[in-house]
Length: 401
Ligand SMILES: *Cc1c(COP(=O)(O)O)cnc(C)c1O
Image 1 (cartoon, rainbow, N blue to C red):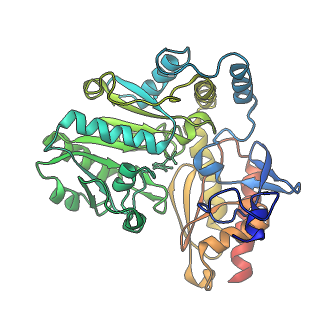
Image 2 (cartoon, protein in one colour):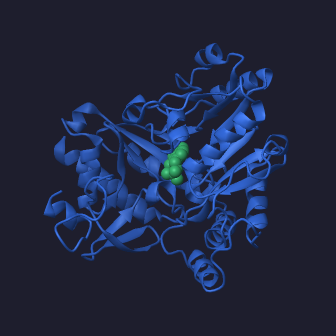
């Protein structure tokens, strides 16, 4: 641990009080408003990443701030021995936005926990012997051991072997490959509608329909991990809705509470019924402070018609990037986009290095693969801000090409 690393975290001595889990952070941010963030030296940044598709309504949104402040002054926590006032309304809204058959919600605190709950529910519903979960290569489902086992990135498994058993990984976006793996012992298939961490790889609509049909025929549960893609981000309330299919289980987190830690698992009634008292739980999950933010966030996302806004902003940003030299293509849906940079424009740089250069010019994006940037701007981003951000990306690509 160097003094420099300690200083990067704002530590007072030369010892970092924080574990070296995230490397040395390039900035300490102290204030946000809308799509803008300020670091401790007062430098302004445009936030085109939203804390990884979380703060869709922007930083310090007045309605969310008010809800949290009022709740903090009223009641923050009671445990799940009791109900609190926001749980039913938030669950009803989630159920309505998911659509399809009626379902029920179990609150959690994060995406990994929502998936952990979903994987346990599949096992409980299907029983031992039909407990195998199939997920996609290059998928990302979280960092707890079972969510990690579902994650199709073997390099992330290696340091923590042995993994929990009962997981199989399949080539992404290929129905024939999936069909080969759907043996009698498979109880569930978990997929993202757009692979976020895996490189912003959207599934074909025809693939999602084929998956739903194949699983239905075999009594296999279809689980959609909408942690990154949910709540309007892809231009529909949920990514699976682009395919017009009806999943059995949906997991959510990130965008649902604009930055407060809320995750949840939804399941259609018949599947949800497999969980009874004591099967799962969490001390904090669904507590009033976090859910006050979720309630206010969902009300605001509905008021602005977030999916429509995402589609409209997507067309603006795609148009801007179309004219940038050095970009091979833009992929993704809505406001979750991957920008693939041509190798001659990279000119030996990685996308991570491009992202770092963008940061130095005041734009937050990330390198989602060695050759692609991810952008996930907030719904409230203005056309001027989109133009400013696209301009920075263009400049950074040009200066090293
Ligand atoms: C971020 C993410 C997770 C994990 O969520 P955490 O809140 O970090 O645990 C799971 N699935 C997907 C698709 C994600 O993008």
